[in-house]
Amino acid sequence: MSNQKHQLISQAILAIATTFSLFSATVANAASLNVLWYGQTDAYNTKISELAALAPTFDPKGDGSLDWNLTIWNSQGATPDFSDYDVLAIGTGSKAGIFNFDPTGILNNKDAISTARGNRTFLSGQDADAHYFGSPGPRPNGPLGFLVNAVNWAGSGEGMGIVVLPDGHGDVNSPPSSRQRWWLNDRSFLKDELESYVSYFNTNSVVIPTETSDFPVNEGLTTAGISNWNLSSHATFNKNIPGYLSINDAGSRPGYAITIVTASEADGGTLGDEIETIPEPGSVFGLFILGGFGIHSLLLRMSQ
Image (cartoon, rainbow, N blue to C red):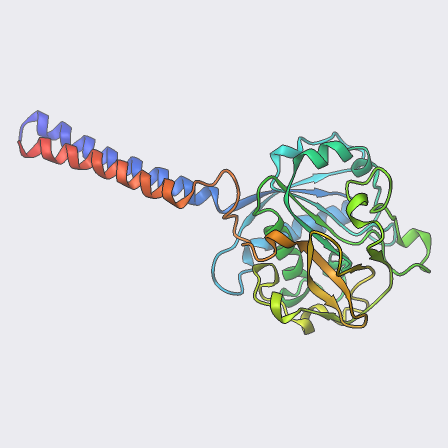
């Protein structure tokens, strides 16, 4: 065999390897999220790190999962570049127990968060982080699945998604230490959309409506699994709130929601499919077409 044909064979092998390497890179890009979690105590932050490690194990439908590249943002720490993250998660606003919530970082960065904020927002009255740490614990059909779904859904849209848990434990009569109300603060990026649509009361009854039960954001969860956490929720939203859709209703209070998400994105995926850095399917197909043309050209030259 001539040296020229040896060279052409080597080029063909290189073209095939390059095509598959690029395809593998696109798959790898789709497998993780950059998660920014607003930190609290060292113990709290450790638990959130444990949650991040468990996130890729939650896959009830067997259709894939996401790794989390977790960054803890402490309230007194340097302000992050929000554009570097797929999702910002803000846990329960309390100073009780493992919590030591300080809203300073959030309130001081209203404009920066608003600028980076994307097209998906997840707001809930369920203090799922508290119940992940305590009872019922990291149960898949419970706090674990609830938190993983929330972050994966919010992080799979355009820009920086938002996940926000209640700004306190308990109802309006609970002690000040258990509620660090910041949602309606003048410097809150949520105030304008939530004002006059929020109520604070405790409930154990959380109902997943039939019309949203098959949405990816509710994957692996049932009404029974997210109810009876003693207590399951501490805040509700009027279901008439503009721009949002209830994915979990308040069973004990008709007309109110426990968890709401951006209505236009409510049935969106949780696998990172919508992240801007992920090539469109047509791009991947085009990659194979280009690779195929290159290989075909080399083979023709070899036959001459």
